[in-house]
Image (cartoon, rainbow, N blue to C red; front, side, top):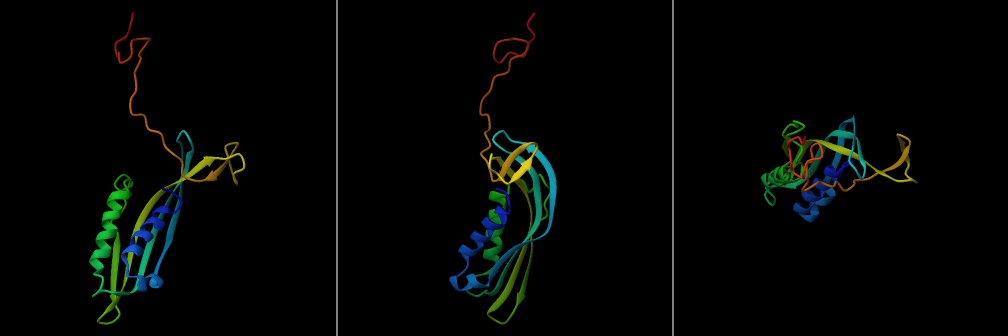
Length: 165
């Protein structure tokens, strides 16, 4: 995922959980962003940078007797652990949240999550981005991972790690 896809994807998961009447009172945005330059070739494309940002999710007038805020928080925690597999590697802090009671039936729930996402470029002759003498589009690309391989050392047989005379 890239280009704020974590924000978009988690927004969708939270919105699915909310009663339909709460959809109009749900908002999500990015703030405190940093564009960390970290170019890395990936075969079919490249990572140009990392987008580090704080995602804020706001549910106004959450009917907490109808939908327990703990259910929303558990959903966010589960999604982060299933999807954002780089959190530990980048030492991202745990999410913050705030529940502000409005009356005896509703509260505003704000959840803040720090994300670090790759900004991917895909080669595209007509792409809008010029970088390193080529044209690119901003888009995720398929990363191919080798599942098997052979090692040859100094002309040895496949799998050989000994030097041949």
